[in-house]
Length: 301
Image 1 (cartoon, rainbow, N blue to C red):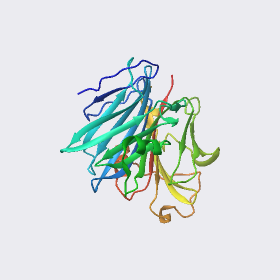
Image 2 (cartoon, rainbow, N blue to C red):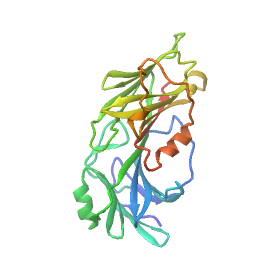
Image 3 (tube, helix red, strand yellow):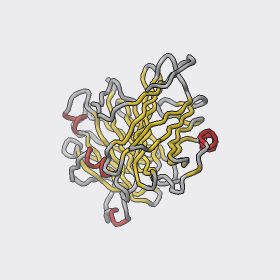
Image 4 (cartoon, one colour):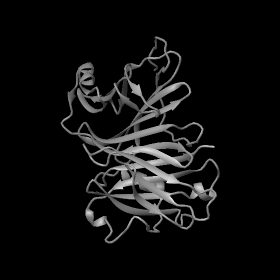
């Protein structure tokens, strides 16, 4: 049942229940950021994914709740339309359990990407408990919902983002709770050179360099960030050998212990171990594997 909507404005949203079927990602349609949190829902662990996307009509919001096997329990979309409600509430039933989704984007400020920078909240409430709240207006979310904070702190376990560029792709990365937010850039110039090179920088400082990329189009390497081992996986096969619509995939996974930091390794060489993007991202949601940032880099024409 759809909520009745009123008002008129630029970035409209419409609330509707949707199925959890997956769709093919296309360069023309995707400008997406998805953040996944491990939470407690009625004493049971679950994953809640908050996704932000952007198209010509405006900004969209999606909230999806999965169990530990990554089976979708429910999903709610907030889509742009001429008639919109920038703040609202949606109640959904999951196995005879009522879950409430609250959102307020009425004063949200957006940058170039689809994810709001400030002035917003998205909250998930069950049995009077705020299971998850995202945004800088947490007090307002608690006041609006009348809920109490959860006894279990949510854990930010993964972020997935689509990037667009020609040679340089930029994002921001925070590899630990309350850790430093780093400017992350990926550079690759594979056209017009016989030996393309891949460079990853944090705050303008090179932390990884891969030479002979046509031979090492897939691989992984471990670096140290803020004293924390972070393993970088990359797959640039589609950039080098695929179609013009192909994307490269990069995954930054915090390691469980410093033992994974390879002894004597420099930033100028890599391991040739191949990896599966889909399996690695699925494993990144498993409790205890640390935080995972997955970047899909699309080339602009």
